[in-house]
Image (cartoon, rainbow, N blue to C red; front, side, top):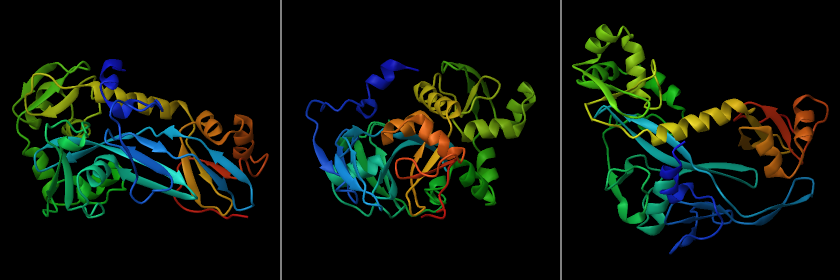
Amino acid sequence: MNTTFENTLPIFNFSLQDLPGEVWLPVHGSEDFALISQFGRVKRIPRHFTSLIGDNRYYGERIYQPTVKTYTTFKSGGYRYHLCCTISAERTHRVFNVAKMVYFLFNKPFPMDDIDYKIIPVNGKDLDIRPDNLELIFVKDPKIDILRIKPTYSLDAKLRIFNKMEYSKELIYRLGVISCYSVHGDRICTFKNITKASQLTHLSVTDIENAIIKPFLLVHGCYWRSGKDGKINTSLMELKQQQEENQRRGVQLTQFDLSGNPINYYYSIAEAAKDNGISETEILNCLHDRQQVAAYSFWKKGYHETSIPGI
């Protein structure tokens, strides 16, 4: 992973020590649970929590790790990044766009739930979310980008839905010139269009389309982009690959409260055990039906958004 790249972005600084000039404000809608600074760092507020059975638990201060997400803008044939943060508290689970929250609190309020409002970086760097680099725009065109479908859908789900629209494939083919790049971001070759690239490389058109739509995807050891830039930044690719590798190494878990409602999600048993102050064995016992409850919670493998029978 590119350590130098991460060190230049405050959002990847997970130290509890304040950065120079850092100001913290309550997260809108989660004022009792989290703070956010003008650098996009989100911090959990220490608190005591009483479970449904009367047990008192303590959640200490911590910096939340953001999730880097990507989406395709079919209008321009490009792609964009944005940061999301997940807050789990008081039997609730909330995901919000970090750049929107920074603009709302440090620039001016706007209807954050209205998907016609977009936040874009002035300098073109999507992860530079300082307030003075953010611009609010109003976009009414429902074809402007793939996020118009539903923000909570996964990228694959969005693509399946979007591909049902007649103009989606046509727009992809109109991308024109495309290029392939090495894992280090150096341009290897440029092609007149996708069809020509398929003929010369013996890759299927579908594989190349998927690589353009999903910028983190390697096809036969190469990245693919529309246009003919001499070099692309692969730092985010390395970060995404590291996140996916961490997910593959662990066991994805869903934590439920005693009423059966999902309250948290983890990518490994070790992470879940550390965050809840219990041993990994207790969670394993729950997963293998050797015990029912650990940390006053139910546990199941996988990602579950629906409730289960509670006590």
